[in-house]
Length: 147
Image 1 (cartoon, rainbow, N blue to C red):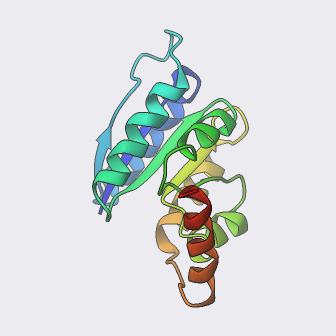
Image 2: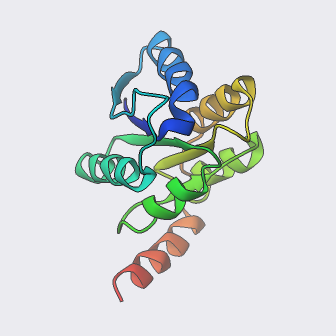
């Protein structure tokens, strides 16, 4: 599975930790930046890059990291077909995949420690969308997107 990942300057260090972790677990990782943790950049640009890549390839998942995760999540959810979830605990993360079929995970580097961020990432990647009764709810969300 290919994971597309990006961050702004605030999430740059945590992104490098997550990229290393994913590669050790044999995931294909596409890192869309930023790789300069000291130069301020605009998170919407990185959220757009990941959202576009996830929409282009149905089997791809995305990870976005900024200071709180909020800006990345808001921006990513502006793209039709993206279901980005800001997660800060394992249970919500699991439900985001199982019930909401979240295709982008958003994390706050200034909110989470490395260990918790890795636990959230692993939980998200292990969980699978359950479909069934949840699909009708996603269909309603798609209907709202189309209006």
